Image 1 (cartoon, rainbow, N blue to C red):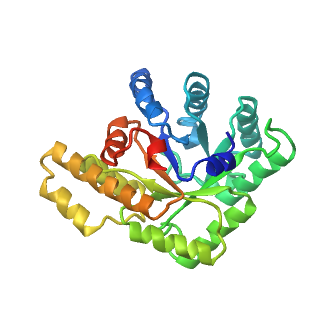
Image 2: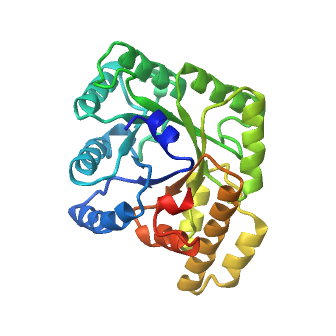
Image 3: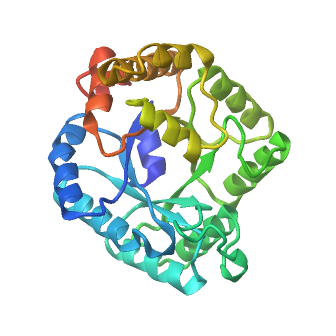
Length: 304
């Protein structure tokens, strides 16, 4: 279903992110969890994408398998890094032929092991270039939906690590929306005040598309440190760190603290009429399911 139809249907969208497993064991583990995710009735799901060929085919395979064997509506990520225009066209053609309705257009990180990768040979330097490419593809009538692909882009409530100037960062986001993005999904954050302030600033510069809040419960100390590495601009509030450090030697206690914090974030976001919540699941359904249960919901319909 086109993302604009999803936002029209659902007063609050609840969505999940998966990553393509790298082994047969990982695929089996994910699909043992899929029924749990399906039972929660998400508005849509997204599938991450590895640059430099690391998980490109796996992304396509996972999207196709979700489409054909589950009730989930997948939106694959697509990145600029390590791509020519012809490669992007072929990827879009494959998704269009499979009836995939939506794409998440991202700048992307350098492939692992290629930290000094020279981007001068990449066809698309920024996510806005990819958004424009997807729009041109759609305008040529190469998608079965006359509107073409629905397009999502990333937003950074606490600032983009590559753009310290917060005003320029908003200008870049506005340019992506003006180029044809249908909605914005944020990087994970742990302080809702930062999200609300960012939403107000988006409104001031004329960004009127739905803004979806990215939530990721901390389930271990290792996960905390990994988040800090991957999401350079993300701030961890002192009260959250205090609770985690207090019980850092008790893995189950750390998990309870992280899930409780994320649950309270979701409760507050829903009370403030957030347009959508996107859960970074790490392919694990337990934390997301626990958040739903604690909020008194058996599925997404109960949260709208």
